[in-house]
Image (cartoon, rainbow, N blue to C red; front, side):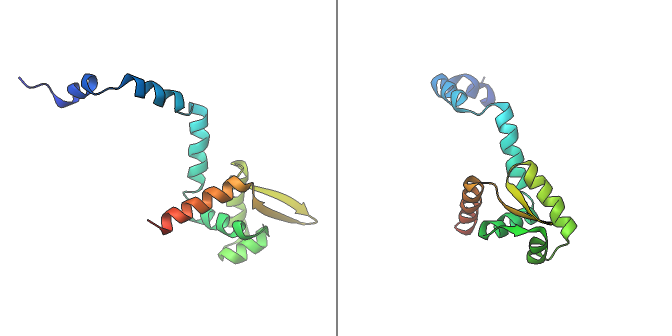
Length: 120
């Protein structure tokens, strides 16, 4: 009688050294959760457009709303999430709050993703 295919793979093809190496390199659960939240933030087209606009320059909520053709409250809602995930930072000047990408990592990841999509 022929051995079921799933059972055959369980024992014949496992490379224990490669499994240990992969386990040693794999991110821990809290880091995986944070990274998933980071990428989830980029799963929304509006947030991607905000990141895109901020990759060009620092903008206030009103400028972002005009740029994206959306209400100030809708933009503020998205910025709140992006701030919580440390994708954008803010600074207050008088009554205005200006937003920028949090650091070069955010800009780089955005650009790499954009390059990937454009060249796929």
